[in-house]
Length: 625
Ligand code: PEP
Ligand code: MG
Image 1: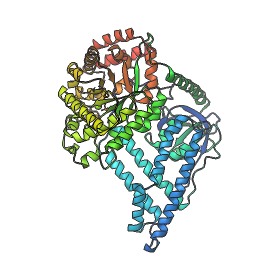
Image 2: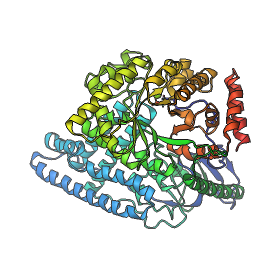
Image 3: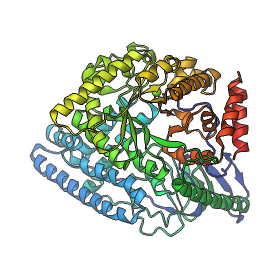
Image 4: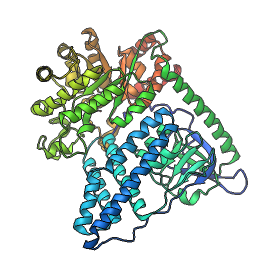
């Protein structure tokens, strides 16, 4: 799915190195400077000597066993499982030395690994391969982990959102990772050690496991470079959580970077400079200082109110797609979750999750938010969001046979599948006993859908009360996404039925301009600053304000610091965004006056050309920077 919204990009947190591959005269006169490009996974600039931490591959030499050895092979596997659990238990113990936020990020992953060593699909599959196919324990582990990971990835590649695909890749990586640990223990291959890592060094290795990342001491380590790995993996998530600048997936780094070399790594631009010249070093040192200042400013911002210069309070919330993002939300300074996309619960599983499973998951999130509100959107199946468990259960048609964006999507599907809808509503209502919750309906186009949904919602609540479940005295508000032109243009009528609105500018842009969000051929036409989109946002916002209904923006536009003042000028006071955007948006909010935003919005709304609008937005951002 294409999440680029065609708007001015979010400004980088610090000045960036220019992304130019080059070689130049060396500082020392010995080795030439070399610039390499990789994937920026954790922002910041670091300078230091390279510490190489390679790990010999675990070699498998025994593939088959005799039938008489099945029991002995099973015992070897059990011993490796016990040893792996012990290692992970030790790792978990070591987390206490990390900053609290990093611990919160890393601990769930270690727990997931430990769970996988229990009676999991992986371990069951490995045992079966040993018994039925007479495979050695190590080859059974590799085969089973690969098979499970391949299934996860192939399901995921069938058309979910980019975020979902990233989540699935992470899940596949978890399975492979625990497989590798078992193989290492089965073959007695040594694990990498960081014992000799000098303070201030940049770690280089071909690849880095998430568990390795958990062993790193962010206070000692300047940065990380690897030859393999990507932006979505757990290793990347962990390095971000540790706040260590990192560039992964630097092709050819193994040849170009030698232990002891001085390197500059720019985790924001995805650049590694080996043997920098004196000039590069001086510029990079300035960037290190600028970045540290920027970070301090954002950390201070977290505690400051999101309030304009003239004292108008603005609500900044986070969108949540996967529970692993919870610690990032806590760090961001967001006050609550403005959009909890619940699709993650339905993905990468063979069956639809039961009420108890869903209730537990929502409850965890609600409790983690410590009294801040959580807006839970019910399942938004359809469009580019395909879910295997629903196809397997025959609940949805084959997405390939329909025009998914215009078909049975969001609330339309839920109203056709009341059991699915009721189960989810029941789970959300149960979680609402643990903190403030709002329920949100996706892809609404008419009032009848809201009325029908409310009837079901109230019926579910009555049933739960009869059953003796603990529910909040007043039912959580039931609101809707405004993400179709139909909904935007009937916002006045919808405001009579819905308790709140959240404007989903991603789909609203796509449906208004008839541009598929994931279609690269027409990506240049996907423009949220098109006057038609802006007018729909304005119309819906004004209708909500007239009817005194809370209204927010939760599409990508709401997290773009350059665009938020325009939306504030239209009357919006609530935005929900990717957690990383919260400090940048807050900084902009604190630097503008509402009156200036209103005057600016008036001028913008007179324009017909998106290019002019874009220029005006850039100029306004510059004036108020
Ligand atoms: C939107 O359409 O703007 C939105 C927030 O929903 P999603 O991106 O999940 O479709
Ligand atoms: Mg949407």
